Amino acid sequence: MVQAYILIQTEVGRAAAVAQAIGEIAGVALAEDVTGPYDCIARVEAETVDELGKLVIAKIQEVEGITRTLTCTVVHV
Image (cartoon, rainbow, N blue to C red):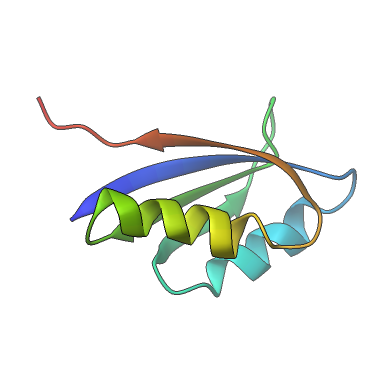
């Protein structure tokens, strides 16, 4: 299982709607709107790195109101 945090910037005033829409996507464990340099943070899970990439590119980045994402993969050392 591959896990990652997706840091998301949105259009002004769209953070809550984006977080709600992302939270409904399969593979998203948690999505919340936050303060700071990013507007939303999502924790996602996928079986492989390739599936994680597809989740981010094909589903999350397609949500209306998103301007930029940054994927931070969880590592266990």
